[in-house]
Image (tube, rainbow, N blue to C red; front, side, top):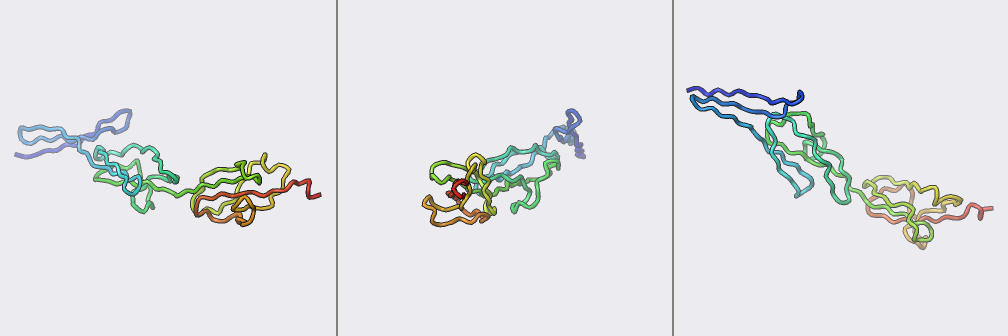
Length: 178
């Protein structure tokens, strides 16, 4: 006897929500909802596998978190060069890769060594120029940025960030210049 397969989609509000295959094999009739594996690679050694209905796109994934990193999108290749298309139907087993950008902490103290002027995360290798809150620098001239509270080793503004960084700002009163 001959086997006949009919493909069908179930629609809700004009959007395909299910893909089904109806099979008639002689006197036997079956309905199959074909599924494919989707591997969601969050980071090295951290992969979640889920099933998706074949021939349908999958819903946009939630934004994951990874300590000391900034999430930079979902990609269809391991090198994270091709953005994943959440509108394209999934037809075979698929892997989706999270792209991450390493970040470092930058903490900037005022010249008292205790008052935190800035505390932020900065992407690795960013040429960093601090933006100091106006209330901290009001009435003051910035003499320089230093790597310790004793103001011995100067840090160069615009240097790339390659590790967690603590900066001390040395200031002088503008009135003391007159």
